[in-house]
Length: 265
Length: 52
Image 1 (cartoon, rainbow over the protein chains, first blue to last red):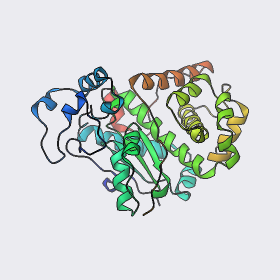
Image 2: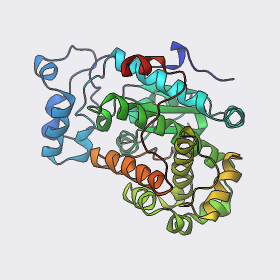
Image 3: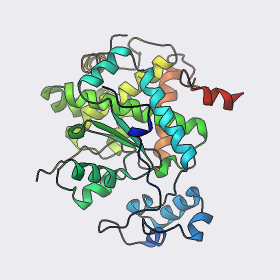
Image 4: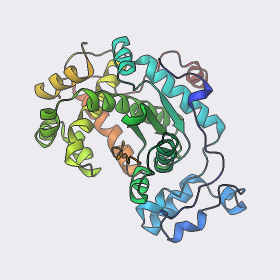
């Protein structure tokens, strides 16, 4: 059963960042404040955009995840609404499929995903993530946790911080569609499909291939990331009234996405 | 206690990556004659109000 559309599925990180042993020490660490404390006036005076620039000046990828301010209740509510509408825009048979594989629950957060995933896993009785794993997940905009049957989206991610309303909406919709496509791939793709990831990536449109390679995924994730990205593109195309195989998509990838996602349009 | 190793998630490293994602999508759509302008989501009254 779908658990969405109510406040129950949405979590919010109310104040600041929690400092822990996994946080890097660097110039941007000046902006770390205790989770239980209020925001210092210097924090309130600096926009997320400025914080992002400061982090880039620090030249530390990890510290970029600290350079973010709370997005505010209004923007978070907007993000929740957008993801809910993105779900409703999926073809009915895809929603049913996602419900059947346990990928129809989601949380839209204003919190880096590393600690969020860690907390959820611990509360479900699993061991905590290793610190390096948590830091790595903080870079993600969204993810599907197969073991928990849950999609998480970080609406407060630093790359979304100063986007205009339309681009913010577009990126959130894209992230949600990507994650649902990813979940379908993880559950329904076969071993041979995963093993063919490198070759399939070579068949992908140039920009898609380059983005996946640059993101630094493991080779075993190439197929899932490719299916997820193509699924998001097909949904985006469908939203504009176009279905069927796009001329820019290789036959083999299209057939794979159709088999894995149940795409029939 | 069992340790779970989740996937890496949807990694978008920086603002340039956001621009690249949207640019690639727009170019693919344009290549087949589709207007890449985002039409919005059906039922999004908040957006409709904002656009008016």
